[in-house]
Image 1 (cartoon, rainbow, N blue to C red):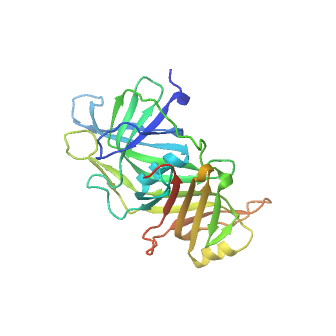
Image 2 (cartoon, helix red, strand yellow):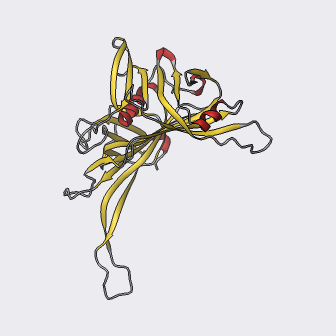
Image 3 (cartoon, helix red, strand yellow):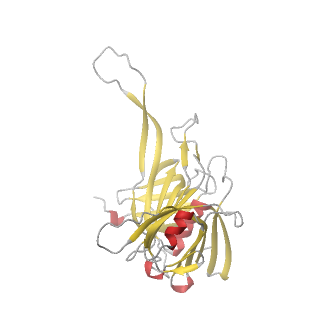
Length: 316
């Protein structure tokens, strides 16, 4: 009998796309739903009978989500996979690093658009499933009151095999993830307390591409379109400032900042947003809020639409 609470999820960066490596870090996750699905195809139609003929199994499709609360250390692994570029500056040599993650403007390789990793999924049933050649197609960061900062990483993998489970070791100092009560928000260069929750989505639009490669596994993971980013959330409707920004399509800069014990921190820096929806109707007698949506736009000066500065004990 398997129990979710007894499972674990491990990860490690790959040196070569699709070549599995042993886990070097572990998530204390909320959920995962990796699934192996098989394409199917027909091989015959005219069979002298009133029955469906046998078909055949085709390409293996490996995909799923990992949802977790964002601990300062393993969060860097997801940011690196989703954005592609990282640079580190020592804040306290050997102990603390400021890692800056930005979107790369080229593909990582001819077979993988973004950095790949191996994931170990242990579901408390005999062996672990090892997912190799996994790339992050979409990363969603979400925070609300009474909640930790949460990440949902949507991955596409190249191959999966069963392995003996490893023994997880989770990060400590701090033990807990970034939480809502240390989050601060600035809009247009000014601090604001009007934001009551946000969801930041970075969609890399990745696709698993099959080929005649002597295998049922996909051959490569490439882009189906450009990187697209959105920022949505709930804002108190106290004045017309943001509504006029929506009407006039005025661009604003956004910074979202989290702190944690032992000088750990996260800064999400978005140089340009424009509101794409600002529905300010009254649903009834209650206090008025607006569920806004905005688009992230590329900033020529900083050469990105989003950067993340993560200060933690790891150098990425």
